[in-house]
Image (cartoon, rainbow, N blue to C red; front, side, top):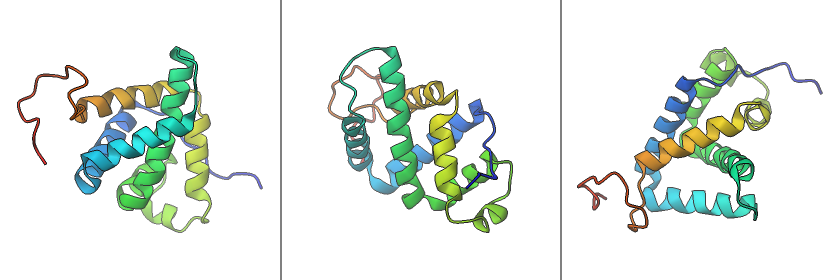
Length: 147
């Protein structure tokens, strides 16, 4: 079956959108739940060799897993973003075949800029969600005990 949709090139606004989705996931699921999800996705990614190429590929695999989870938790936000990615409207996306979202996710995973996109999104997530266990020096914020 040939795909009839094509995602556009990822842009800066997509990093902002994904960062907002991740922030909403933190609020909805809680900091620890999202961190656990990311750690589990990272463990499943399975690359044992360190290095920029494998790290970037790992960020992509983890990012795709986070998007899949976000689709469950924040369906409206992710669907709005997916509609934008295919230069469509949410209403038109809602009327597309059931496999459309999977096709969008696959195209996200396989697009040439995916590794850079998810690496940048990972950095954005780290800024939004500094570790609560004190393992990194962080940005020095004073609200470390907000639940």
